[in-house]
Image 1 (tube, rainbow, N blue to C red):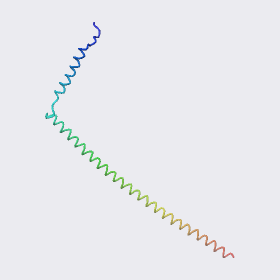
Image 2: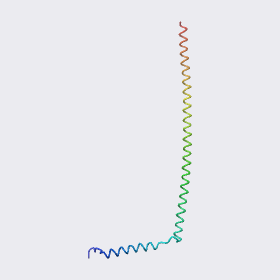
Image 3: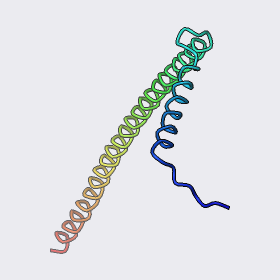
Image 4: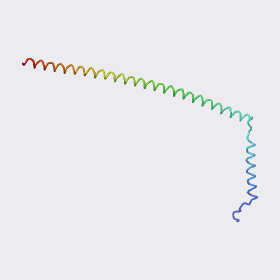
Length: 118
């Protein structure tokens, strides 16, 4: 049994030529741009691209609508919180006024009792 034979320059050159020839044959065997199957695939790709573009546009419209609704909800929530704070401030002011009135009444009653004792 013989060992591994190192390919010589001529063998390598022949192999490179054969590889280039195979690539050239492969390229030549492909259908041209005017071939019906190539045109059909191109039209199919164009249709797919158009559907994707429409779907993307639809998603963007839906996203914009969701964002608008979220902004409206946030604005309504902010208005509700502001209204609640205002109502709380009004309630606290009324409570403070009521407490002051009670305190003033107690003070006046204490002063009145003091005047009767003298």
